[in-house]
Length: 341
Image (cartoon, rainbow, N blue to C red; front, side, top):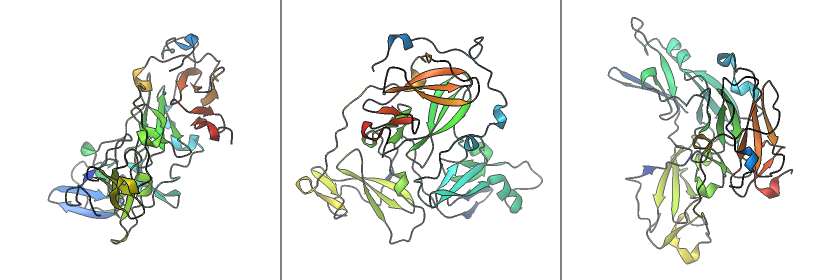
């Protein structure tokens, strides 16, 4: 790469709004003294009537209690393919069970594995005379001892929140009354964990979808940034490394190099915004009657840029990112030209 102000000798990991991008590698064993790691291939226009506090978990008549949460499986209650548009060889965390992981291949689930099974099949991993519990760490992409695992967040009973589904860019988990629901952004939009909703890629800048873990040493991938003309990523072994061109230069995808700005057709406009995440704003009760059972999404009665989310009879009003409209067909906010298509 010519004219670059950074070198591969001192790269840094890109930390996008989704939180993480990490190295993905084929499964291998790493034994280091007593420590064992099993590395896996692994938006504010609002109707005034909406501005009321959402019902609390103890409000009478506002819905049923969310029961048998331990038996609820997010994956069997969705039509979204968690591996859709996920790079091959990538391992995803399993929501609700910190010991499991999901391997994706050809846009489908290849395997749902368990760190516990790995321990059983390999007696040398744990000392049979001592307690040993392994869990999958989505940050490090490894199976390791549970006390060292950074598990995905869990859904709190009385809060509305969301969190990123690591290494997917477009998927996230929406939480309300303790139930996780898998969500997916469409049409090139990406999940922004700073706003809790789907957003334009220039505000997110996630490239994990395009960094495959299946590679040959010569297959280094260069990807332009979605947020800056002078920034790019180098993907090696499924790992996106952020790079910055020298001042006055811009990344040119034609030559995969830093070039004079006049030679690069790049225009990125990411105006400053003030969008508070759902988790930091007062909840607004949905002015509809929600079904008493299950999770449901409905279009807003008077606004195209908002929708209702119902969980077990309780409902809240959610806003789209400015510039997006809710589409009942995919139950998510989209760019207007795609709504209903």
